[in-house]
Amino acid sequence: MVAPTWRDWVFSGKAFAAAVLALYLALMFDLSRPYWAVSAVYIVSNPFAGATKSKALYRVLGTLLGASAAVLFVPIFVNAPELLSLVVALWTGTLLFLSMLDRSARAYVFMLPVHAAADCLAQRQWSRRRFRFALARSEEITLGILCATLVNQVVFPSSIGRLFGDRINVWLADAGAWAEDILRGEGATPSTPLKRQQLASDVSSLDLMISQLSYDPGTKDVVGQARELRGRLLMLLPVFSSLADRLHAVKQQSGLDDTLIALLNDIADWFKLGGGVETEKAGASLLARINTMQKQDKPHGWDDLVMSSLLTRLKDVVELWQDCLTLRDRSKTGLRPVSDH
Image (cartoon, rainbow, N blue to C red):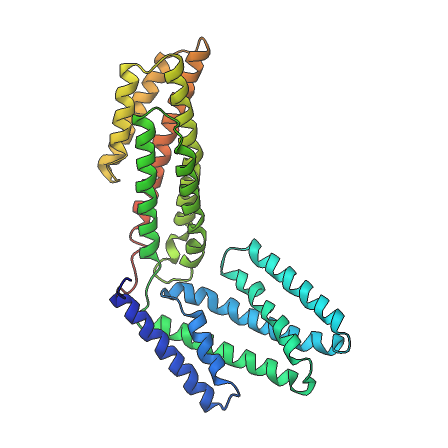
């Protein structure tokens, strides 16, 4: 069991303070179910201020939509429980389907109204209390969401930019290790598909984080660069696989000459530099060497065509990797946390 860090304690304290504030306000306004506001705080709370803010609006809209559906469906189908069950099933399935299409915080607009189905079935015997129930649910859940958002934005706000930057660095390190295996090894290996699947999964997980960057005051200026960086990362995966296949084909057909081996080793070493002016200069030198080899090797047969394709892929890899490092370096300032509590 891992002991909580000081950041965990700060987040726990903020969530508790927001829950106490929501409970106090619910009791002060004499709301019927104050515990709803408290539970909403803990459901909404997120360690990152931008993530909480991005979800707040859509959660409120989803709650209001669900309460409206509860008030609408029950009077119409109260005397036909079979039809009510069918309507609730269609409502639930349709909204869940729509929520799966959107991986951003907007999915909560479709996800939260699903809870209206349970409210419809639970309240159909108490038609006079139905509107009061929906109103109380909307008021107290909205109160909890607003309290959680307010406390998270004011008290030691934590930026998601730091986590996003760390994820990018880890991804680039893993991709660089895979590229080094390809360049120094035999090209395609049995582990190549597994590595590609893992890297693709990691890139896909960045989508939600990028969508939350625009809600964070400290990172909203780098959202465009973050999206461009994600696009470059996705482009690297098929290029790496294509490079591995071509290296394997060249070695099986004509073998790797000393000049090509030296180039591959230099590119593998270049992947370890990690960015900066020196990396950019070294990348330009590698591109010049590749261009020189492309001019020298005129395609006359199948082996020459495969070699030409290999050099083209090497050029693509160097250019894409340099783009990734440049976009990452340009985003560093904007990805710094607003408050590093």
